[in-house]
Image 1 (cartoon, helix red, strand yellow):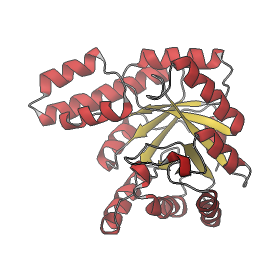
Image 2 (cartoon, rainbow, N blue to C red):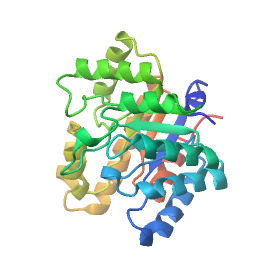
Image 3 (cartoon, rainbow, N blue to C red):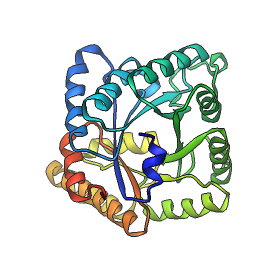
Image 4 (cartoon, rainbow, N blue to C red):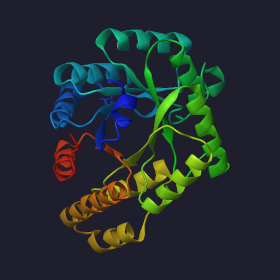
Length: 286
């Protein structure tokens, strides 16, 4: 089933993101974790390409297993980083063969020593346009409520969002954020700029103090007073911090739904227990 069709029903959705293993010896462990998450029957799932393309060879096997074994619609991430016309076309052929019809078109994280001048795709709108011309895929894209770290301004980033919609993106999923008001302000500006497709709120529960610097470093997202207070209070109490982090994410999700926003995407980090906790709290509407 196409993700855009799911989002356009107007029903509340809760979807999950998982990532593939980087190496073959981790494949069975990751597959087991993703199967436990798929068994929760989320609205759909997405499978990443791995940072810098690491694990990309395992993205389709994980995605196909979820789609075929659990009949949960799956989004296969594709990135500009390191991609060529030929290998993107090859991946699309194999995706079609195993019944995966949803793609998230991304620029991708810039790896150390990258040589973008050698890539066939430099921006996500170029990748989306290419995929659109290759078949009946539902294409999603990324949105950044606090702007992409490399964008000169939020206004310019929203202009790029329009380009991605024009290139064929039928919905957008946001980078994680911890201040819902920033997300609501972003939505107002996006709609005022003429972006019309569904925008899915991306939420990541913070479950350990050691995650903090990595999350903020990669996402460039701002913290919030409530999250800062939890970090300060439970820095030396891992169990209490985990509970506080999950509770904070639940409050975010509840507030998002209460504001009439119907679609939430949870960055699970392959944690089936966490996904189950969130699913049991919210689920999705029939």
